[in-house]
Length: 152
Image (cartoon, rainbow, N blue to C red):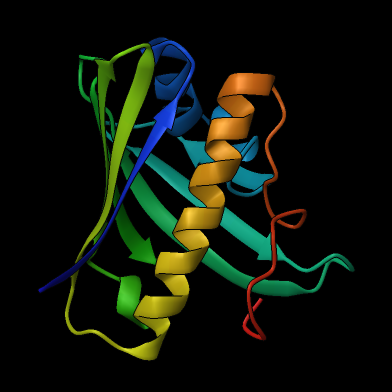
C-alpha cells in the first residue's frame, strides 16, 4: 500500500483546526464550497468539484469518522476516482511550540500512479488553504483553489 503524507504547522487552536476538518462549514471553507452531509452513525459526506465556470470536474463521497477527542479525524472514501475508493484521509492534530501540527495522510492507495502525484500536490494546495482558513478566516476552496495542472 502507498500513502501520501504531509505535515503542516498552523497558528490556530486545535479546536479551530478540528472544526475545519470535521464539519460541513469548515470543509467548505478550505476544500470545496460544494459539500453536503447526511448524519448517521458516521457522517456521509458528498463533495463536488467544479471549474470557475461551474463545469463539474468530479464528485467524491466519504464517511467522516469523528472520534470523541479533538486530536484525530478520518475520512473513508466511498465514491469518486477509482484510485480513491477504499482509501482514507487521516488528520492527526497536536500542539507544538505555539502551532497546531497537522499530520495528514491519504492512506492505502493500491499502487503509485501518476494520479497519486497529482493528488499529493493537490492535497498540499488544500492544506495551505486549510491553514489560511484557520489563521485568517479565509481559505481558497474549489473552485478558487490554486490550479496545478491540466487535470483541474
